[in-house]
Image (cartoon, rainbow, N blue to C red):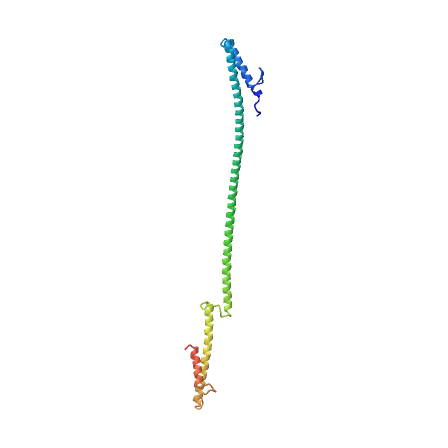
Length: 228
């Protein structure tokens, strides 16, 4: 909007288009109408005319100033509307951004949940595999111990099958030994008895080991073998 000038108020002509020019022509037309009808007399005409000029001047100035003010206010309101529209668009864009971020967050949360489920499942599989390997390792170690127990006495529980078998074998071996000792002692005693019965002069001495000392040792060994 261009600034107000004098020409907006008056063009200093009777036919001007300024606000005062238009008001003066209108005012003069009314005065002439009233004067022609005799409602305004000659002496009153100048007084009414001067008062009308002052009123027209104030009205013209007020009109122009209000017009300029109204225009400026309209421009301000328009600018405020544009600003409000821009702010509204900014808010709408921010809302869309927040919605998009929320949607992205939901998707990311879903992906993370799926990844967690996958990791949990893989962990469970690994745990199961670990338990299986541990079990297989224990079984393999047991088999190794079982196989080793066939040749080595250590590392075998006495209450186990292998342990009891070994105890049985040892008992059988000891039984064979005790039986041999018993038979040997019996042979020695019977031999001495036979010789003594056929030849009273036969002596049991340290040479033939049929004396009381040797027989005592054999009997002691016999009793020891049977746990007596």
